[in-house]
Image (cartoon, rainbow, N blue to C red; front, side, top):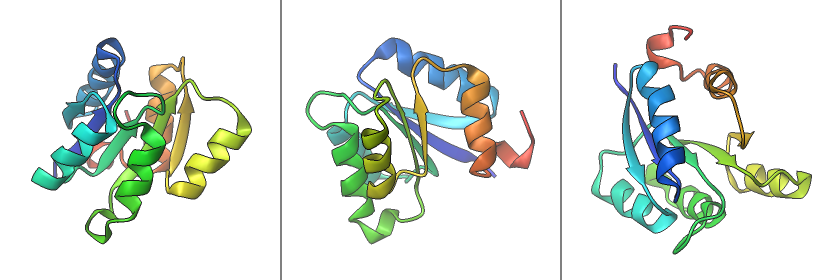
Length: 129
């Protein structure tokens, strides 16, 4: 079974780092530079199993993206993980309340991403990294 992940971040370097981690875990990846681009991709399909979402992006931020995804019943099975520099407890609580499943604060280690994916049961084919 192929696990699909979408990386949503306005930083090309950050998308590259996350893509390297995920492809190493045998995820199939796609990328978007902001929330609206990601919503357009979700609408077009295929719908990913996981979205790694930055908070601060132009056009549509990550928080708005999460609320939009959660408002659409067709996307209720998409796992959402914030990967952001926003480290205030109130922001974390807000994102989780909006529907994010996990929250990773930048900078992070690859192990931190893998650990969160294991918690979510999303390491590819159930094989620990």
